[in-house]
Image 1 (cartoon, helix red, strand yellow):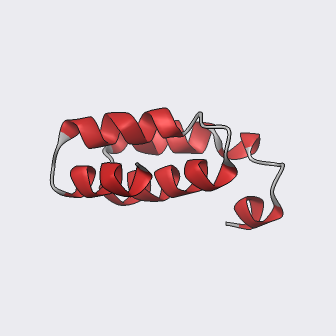
Image 2: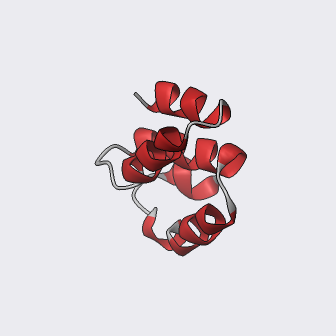
Length: 67
């Protein structure tokens, strides 16, 4: 689902960005990391603020913290 949403965002489909934003609250760190990566590539200015506001939340996984 994250891959599909990323492709949708890449193709300019607004629903893809909406789904990616929703995945930022997913229970899996991997899904959150992938969604953040796609938003970083295809998101808009508001997504930058959204991502920077959530950086401090990711403390449970060393890999995500390092990224």
